[in-house]
Amino acid sequence: MFSHKVQQRLFAAFASLLMSSIAVGAAIAPAHVAASTVEVVTYA
Image 1 (tube, rainbow, N blue to C red):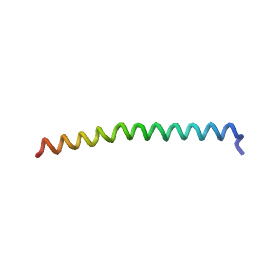
Image 2 (cartoon, rainbow, N blue to C red; image 1 turned 90 degrees about the vertical axis):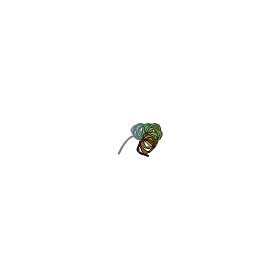
Image 3 (cartoon, rainbow, N blue to C red; image 1 turned 135 degrees about the horizontal axis):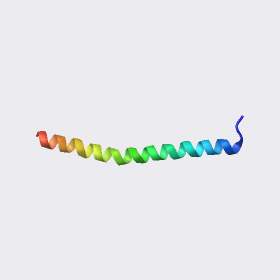
Image 4 (tube, rainbow, N blue to C red; image 1 turned 45 degrees about the vertical axis):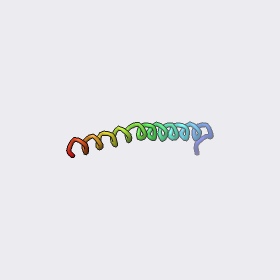
């Protein structure tokens, strides 16, 4: 149905999207943990 090049491009686009979402998640997670720690400290 698809040509090999189109399939390859779709896979590359999907892979880069997945990688960027993982990178964003990895960047946000520590900040979120730090923010909740600060909240706990201020309420304690």
